[in-house]
Image (cartoon, rainbow, N blue to C red; front, side, top):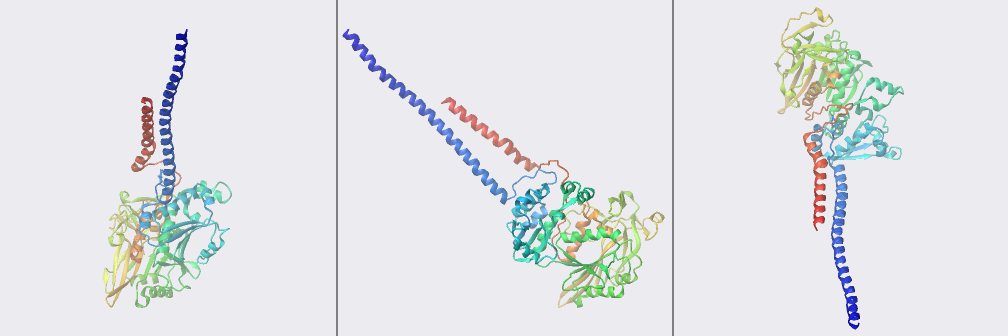
Length: 538
C-alpha cells in the first residue's frame, strides 16, 4: 500500500514536469511563428513605405520633369521638338501668367485642361520659365501691372508672357486663338446652340505660345509696317487677297515679328521704328508721293538696311508708277499668269477663294542661300495664280537681282483679264515667280544693303497653304524673311488634330509601359511565392 501511494506520488510529480516541457515546446513554436510573422510584417511595412515614398518622389519628378507618357494620336499633351530645342537655349527668365484660378482653369473643359498640361511642359523643359495662375478678381494689382503695357483689354483666361527683367516686353495670348474650329459648329455655339468644346477641331496654340516667348526674349525684335491702307481705304482686294494677307502676317507674328498696319499716304514710315514694310497687292496704282515714301524708306538717308516685301496679284489693274519703281530695282512683274500644262507636275490644292481643289504649278527653290533653314526641303511649294517675273539685270553697280522660286519647264502663260481656256498652252519654259533685288552701299569697309522681296501672287500665302504642314509655303517664306532680318529662328509648328481619339504608342514608350504593366507585377508575385515557400518549409 505504501509502495502504491509512493508510485502515485511519483507520477503526480512527473505530470507537472511533462506539462512544463510541453509548455516549453508550445512556447518555442509560438516564438518561431512570431519571428516569421514579424519578418513578414516588417517586409510589408517596408514595401508600403517604399511605395508611398516612391509615389511622392514620382509626383515631384513629374511636376518638374517631362516624365508623363502622352499616348494620344497627335501627342496633344506634348510640345514639339522645335519648341523643346528653343527652350534648351533659353537664357532669360520669363513669366507665364494665366489670368484665371488654376482650379477653375483645369476644370473648365478638356481643352483648357490640355492647355494646362502644355503650359506645364514649358516649365519642365526649362527652369527659366515660371508658370503662375492668378485670379484677376482677387489680384487686380497684377492685372493692372500688365494692362499698363498692353493696348487692348485683358480678360479672364488670357495668358500673359513677359520678360521677367523687363515686363514691358510682353505678349498676350488669347485662349480663343489657341484652337482651330469647325466654322459651322462655332457659329452654332455663337448663337447659343451647342458648346465651344464641340466646335474645336485642333490645337494651334503652341505656335502662339512659343512665338510669344521668342518675341519677349528677342533683344532686337523685327517690326514690320503693313502698308494695307491708302487714305483710309484698303489698298488690296479683301475678297481675293484678304485671307492670304492675314495668313502671311499671322505667320510672321507667330515667329516673333511685330507688326502695325499703316496708311501709305497719311502715316510716316519711321526708319527708327520699322525694319520692313509689307505692300500687299494694291489694286490700283500708287501715287508719286507714295512711291517717294517707299524709296525714302529703303534709302534710309544713305544708311540702307531696310526691306520691302511686295506681293503681286492677278486682281491688280494697271500700275505704271509701281512698275517703273520696280524697274529701277531691276524687277518686272508681267501681266501673264503662270499655269501648268503637265498634270503630272501639278499639285491639287484647296484654296480659300475656290470651292474645290484646283490644279496649280509647283515651285522649286532656285537660290539655296535663302532656304538653308528649311527643316524639310522635300515638301512642295504650291504656286497658284502667280504672275511671271522678269529680272531686268543680273547685277548692276550697287545692285543684284536674284531668282528665288521657279516653276517647271512645262508651264504656259495666260494673259491677265482673259479666260484661261483661251490661252496658248504651249510650254514656255521655267518662269520666275519669286525674286529678290538688293542694293548695297559700302562705307568704312562695312556693307549695308536694302532689299525688295517680290512675290508673284498673294495666293502663294493663301491661308489654306500656310496652315497646311504638308506644304512648304509657310516654312519657306519665314526662312526668307529671317534671312533678310538676320534672324536665325524658324518655328512653323503644325496644328494638332483633336478629333482623333486613336491611341498611338511609340516603341520606347511601349517598353516603359511593359515595365509597369508586366515586369513590376511579375517581380512582386515572384517575391510573394518565394516568401510563401520559405515559410512553408520552415
